[in-house]
Image (cartoon, rainbow, N blue to C red; front, side, top):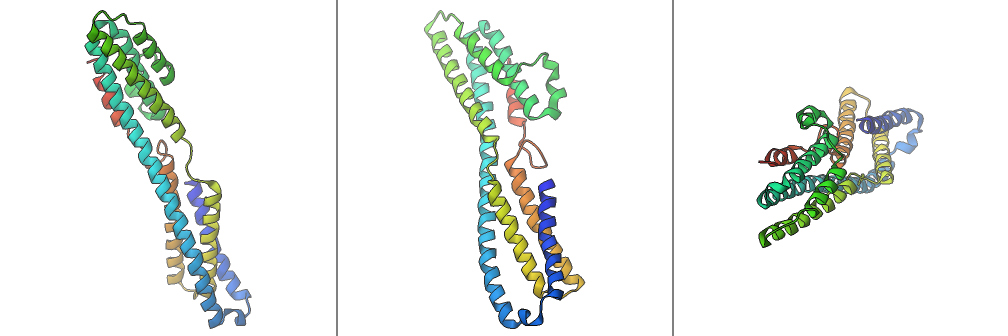
Length: 251
């Protein structure tokens, strides 16, 4: 929201600055020929701004979807791992409890407002430490049958996939929006609004339209920032897949 307010201040400030300049610029600079040249220039800048804004929004949406798919994949792998350990036998009870605590720690870290829902699980280790502890318990198992050896191997393979996806999710926490792109984009929109207001009549309707346009540009930037940071703000990823996985562990 802070970024959105800054963008709005720049864009609508450009409108007010253009209205101020329109009184200071000599009339010969605001002729019809000047307007035609200005329209062509604004068309070029507007096209560039639209392309860059579309690319940044598409990048933010792709990042949002990738993070959501990562959570779904980890949740599915956790359930499969728990099922494999359950089929192995009662010897895996400690490993399953550690797995449950690791999932709860992940929920508590990424969705801290849900702390009360998982606090009843007792002392929670960090997600990484818990996952490593689960892997250690699985490796310490002593399978007695071919079926148990196969389940142990499958469990180790699944936990390797979970660790890999977890590392990828940590990388996805990084922003995908290049700050220079954002600065240039805001500069283009400020130039457009400044130039438009040079030739705009000074009345309430025009000001209302320019205000609405400035709010629209700011909202698009806010939407982009929200999608790029889905663990905070209004548009957030749901913890439902992990909570569903947590409910199945140990049953």
